[in-house]
Length: 241
Image (cartoon, rainbow, N blue to C red; front, side, top):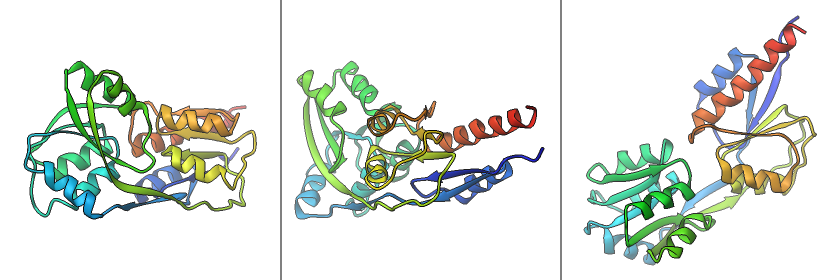
């Protein structure tokens, strides 16, 4: 029997190479963005970055959007910070934009990153974040009497869209995208929902009783590849039934 054409919705843009890889497994991926981000380039942000850019500060990034936003304010200066960040995409952006900085710790999610900071006996950090940042990291650090200076460097703007098609799977990369999607959409009970991490998975569970598959590693590529493997395996199972 011919392989079934599987239809997937990605809620953020993907590299064409990933879409092509899915196509080789008879999986068609549609892309619809449900959020967009915008750097917050206010005088207070500029001053906040300027105040610590020349200091050996300890800073934290849990988003590549935050790293990009801070980099845009540096005006060619490369700070010698101690940086704690999430792995994969955020770490890649950090290493690119802050070559003189030292990555003192990394983790797969914000809660685990907070544990790393506590373990290293850090007493004060600057947390570059967005307007919808989660409470896990600053909450854990505050409980350990670690001083957290938050500088909001970007905002997340929902861009909800009504989806008219039913999909076999939907890929979510952030709680914000989950909230935006479900503000206008329901899904059939058979649709499998894929999450970049535990925080996103928890948000999905608030909106749906559908099966949720969580990525084993942080990073867009890992989640897309896990989605492909999930449905490619299903296709081959169906071929032999």
